[in-house]
Image (cartoon, rainbow, N blue to C red; front, side, top):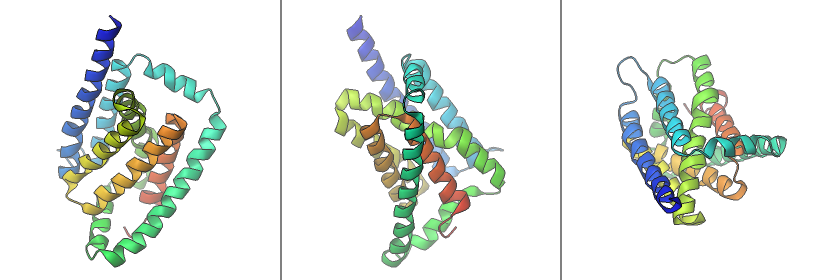
Length: 219
């Protein structure tokens, strides 16, 4: 029974990965579907994926609660510091990439066009409630955790990070894919090191707000 259960959990993590590709590829390729702009669509996808993770892994919610009740202030502090560090990496990378790659400026500006006509208030709200936490709850807290158990700590980390970058390739934007690769490795490593989804949710959400709202890089 235990063996069958383990097989089921493993197969569910692969199903989750397929579902993520199926949902994210059209999002980055089209950015809008009907009356739903990028922010509505992204938020709904993450609700679906996080719900899948919570329902398919009965222990996941308990792990989140335990994470919240142990060293919370330290995790929040590390999340804030790590977000600042990642922003600094992107600040330097933005300047360097514009020198090295002739297409960088246009592609970075194209990333900011994902804002479409959404109000700043709605973008901030969706980033805080759905997008920042949702991406980490699914990509690192669910998928990377299961793939680390399946393939080993480091290969699970690598596979989850690579898939996270690859789904962004549907955008056709090289700079976005490179950015996703850096972010996936960064937050993936933080999860590998600290095993705290709370820490990376704070880091991701704060970084999103800095990059897209408060301290944009050439948008």
